[in-house]
Length: 417
Ligand SMILES: *Cc1c(COP(=O)(O)O)cnc(C)c1O
Image (cartoon, rainbow, N blue to C red; front, side, top):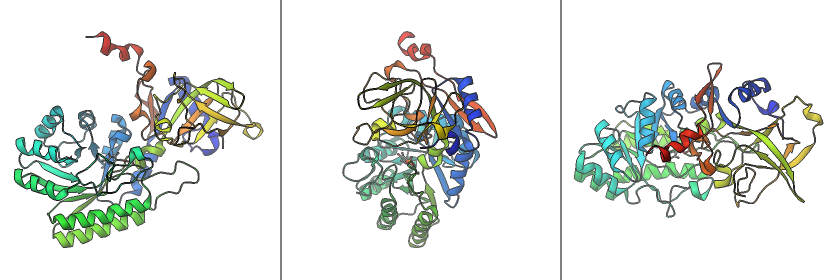
């Protein structure tokens, strides 16, 4: 366990953090665009990087992607609208709509704008084919196995609702309606280990050869993990790319058509760029435990409660202290929600897990790290707590990219009827 100042980079200095806290109040999210760009560069060998925006869907984050030639994945009408506002174009394959169902309002939008659809069910192909012949489509194949850091993020295999089980059947529907098959896609889950990632590679090769259709794209999907724990290793991107590139080459020669290789990460691009800053309001000692109560809850950051996820936690003391002289405590970091599960230091069974942190008192700050992915984008208004602000550090300045929701705004849906 270290002090924030030790593990943070040059941007998240004590001076900067205190400035942001004074200006925007806590809790708040802060992102560093430099880290996003660093991550993008690691994937530059892939022909196309498509950002899974559900991991962090702020329009200003999407603009960073756009400015760096990243394409975008949208999984709802709201995400399509966000992408369009951020400057992505409906044509030239900028946006792909990936889903397992097609609601009427989405169907209308993708048909009107000719946005390619990555179909995760046969029904979607029927719906599209009936009203939009020659519509560009991908097939999202369920490769009959899955992966992921948690059962809830496993998107392949028998237990998963995702993807098309019988891809041959999908081809026959595509041919029936004369839809334009442009790509094959496999995404088996989020936070996938290397072994499973490589299995996907093989599965793509086999499926593509078996289907034997001329396609323009193959997508390796997302799921690349990031080091959340100090002991976690970074994935070897070069090796990963080589395996996929070999599949691409093989398919180009077997299917006799040019093929581009896509990758579709969310967490890998944004996870490490974000932190959540909250303030300590109470340090409560029970017979066995010390609860450090902060003003952010699982309505803000849901991952620990939902998956038992681990996030690095550091302390920012209100007054400068000699960190070497501060005793460590076994703290349980908990939020303000009226629910006993509102804990940030938990095992995946949901059982509380004390963490060594420097001793804190009310008024000090807690920083939860690596929250750029599935942080803000998973937030809710539970306990009627408004959405908290997002700040972006970009081109050497901090700027507000989402202001704090007011209580009035939160209640307006019920009052303005
Ligand atoms: C969630 C998702 C991703 C991104 O997953 P990460 O683990 O954030 O990389 C990619 N593709 C699809 C279809 C997804 O649903």
